[in-house]
Amino acid sequence: MEKKTARLTILIDPDKKAALEELCLQQDITPSQVLRQLIRSYLTDHGIDYKARIAKRDGEASS
Image (cartoon, rainbow, N blue to C red; front, side, top):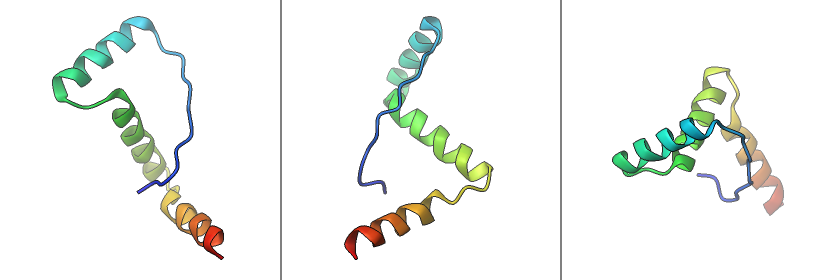
């Protein structure tokens, strides 16, 4: 699991934002959780091994 966070700012149509927030509320999940899952899926679908990068980064920090 990620230990640090970074801010990602996006611009979205207000109607889509409202619909996303409403659906998330119904599903008891936050829009941030949905977006993090979408990003993980997108990276995996395109063969990007972000987990190895995290492990490498964390290993370098403890060295």
